Length: 153
Image (cartoon, rainbow, N blue to C red; front, side):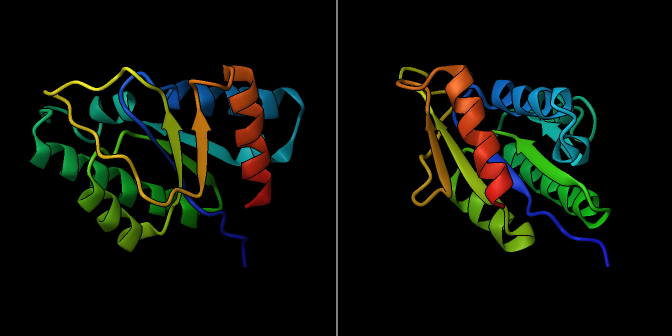
């Protein structure tokens, strides 16, 4: 039986650095010819909106459904032996709870001040498995902390 990696879900407000951390970790792992990097697939929010959620708006309902679609896709890929890193905002606690019920991801909160907007609300997660604070950490330090977290999983 093939080992199942946990699904890792990067959450944080728009512009916090989710995509940067995810793809940076993948590049670093692959450059080091680390087998973990070759098992890692990234489901990026913008790419997912242009594919499995084409036409979805930024309404709360469409965001919710978009997150559930991504979670279902992450499950399919996980079952094929891939390490799935999701870089999707997941802005609402209720949505994150449904995602947790569906695929039990490890939550990584990328914190960065000054990104909130009234038209794009974001509820901070209560108990993430890892917090990467981009107010104090450089992108490089954050990427390395994320890689260490991936290895621990």
